[in-house]
Length: 500
Image (cartoon, rainbow, N blue to C red; front, top):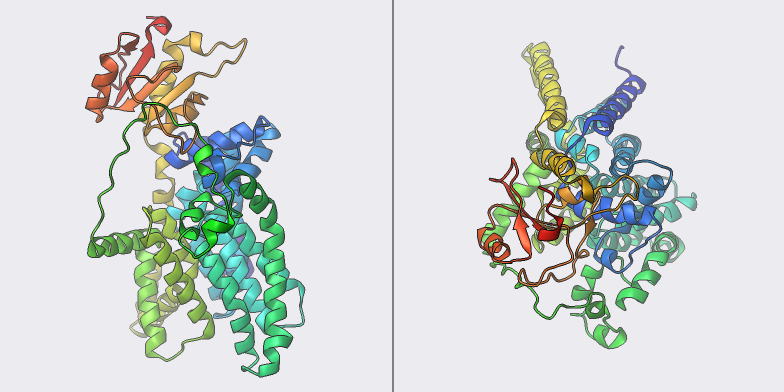
């Protein structure tokens, strides 16, 4: 047999490493969130500035770890990409272990190949997004949980499971799933003991306490820091608004968030968000789910789920997957979410995706079309790789604009003192990264009115904000810059900085 499980795992690992090397070497594009938050604050941390207040609403693990990598001399975006790439590659192993519960080794190994070849995950991994870390710790926690249910003498597994849940919470702010899993643990252990009354005290509760200990050990530094900064022991300050709705919580803690950022005298008006109808939100959530789960795999997963239900092959593990799924969907329903947030569905639904693929190959062999189906799958895999890497070959206008600015305004980028320009951008944090700039306002801080905004070397906004651009044009102390991308971006500089 040419494609043994070991060779398939080697192919998956080698392919993942190769894809990530391509991004590390050739990627010039950067996601807005990565530029606005993760590279910026990780870069500040690499210089010794741990900005607790601004990142109180951001997951700290990527900022902390990427900042440490950057201290070794690695460029900051490369450090963020490398961290995301490591989680992408490491995911192969807990996913393989999890799939072994349901399939023979060869099919489980094919599941890791499918994961590695998911185009959206290739792209998100190569551009430093956080979802790979979240998905890795989720799958690792599930693997450790089910291993403990198989062998409840291994007391180290609950600690590791809890630690994995802790790191999951530090990687992204969706704490609901973490809490659900922690609550589920004693119930699952008790069920595995056939609901014997003594097992609840002898097995289930000790496991729960050990898992909580592991999770608490990982989270305690962040909880202490957040209590000092915000007044609440949470991992993400966005949780505070939810906690304040619980009885007695506002009386127990002092909310310090209002003091995090000084408010200007004339704050800019914030845009009003229109409330979406329930049906519209449901349609939007389903669209995000299908895209994040990767449409092709999602269709196979739905078919596999139907097969499992039809054959009456439902298992306890599937119930755990379903509860996590529902909880995460509920979290994302209540917030403005991007489709990449739903990428957890790819590994979580892989059991059902493989079920449908195996059935497809069985039917194809029955009608003597197996070779044709395999050839079609091979073509699809090649197209997926092309889709995952195509962003490396696109033209990136903001990157070109940053190069034009550096060439046209060299006094703002002197080599002798490395002065970093102070930049204020509207929806273009990519330029902040490309120009190695200092942001005028920190993350989540209120912005000044365009009539009084000052202290910037560059003010940049997208051309669609015509009214805002007119306000800047009326100011005598600013001058608009003519540049090759005038139809996309408007740029203003102080008159004293004009070098034309």
